[in-house]
Length: 198
Image (cartoon, rainbow, N blue to C red):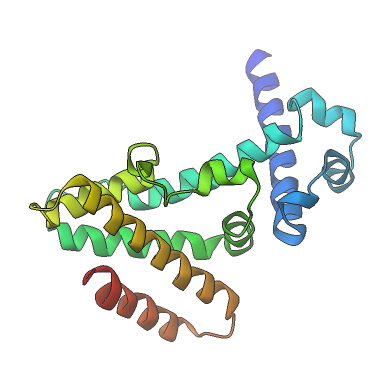
């Protein structure tokens, strides 16, 4: 009985989060409301408050889940036999590919300037590599490539790479008429000409 109730709670939470993601993708973070979520899932707003404290908790959950997808994409599990440069190639490609799987959510998050969103997306400040798991993984990889460069310079290189990846990813999302072959050429060319040569 208890496990069934837990499953029901998880299903309802997922329904709420899924509706929130759809609203965010279409209307942006600032237009998300409990009432809109309730209308979308055809429940009363009070039901949503039974599962989440408020809109901020829902936003926080959406942001964490999106961020974790990206972190998992760059955290390659089987890297033992790869050179640091090969790791960098795979991490970059995985990041871009994962972002392209959730284009609306990715755009809504990356171009949002609210403090709640920036808590997750900011990565260009000094010391970010000690707080942001995805940036931390990238710094570790770059440290293996550039053994003689200090941590401050490694962080800067990582931040430049992240900003560049953001740019190409956003362009690939916005320009929807790019065929798969050209998309792969652009991604691979970007990795070789920008990321690897930085």
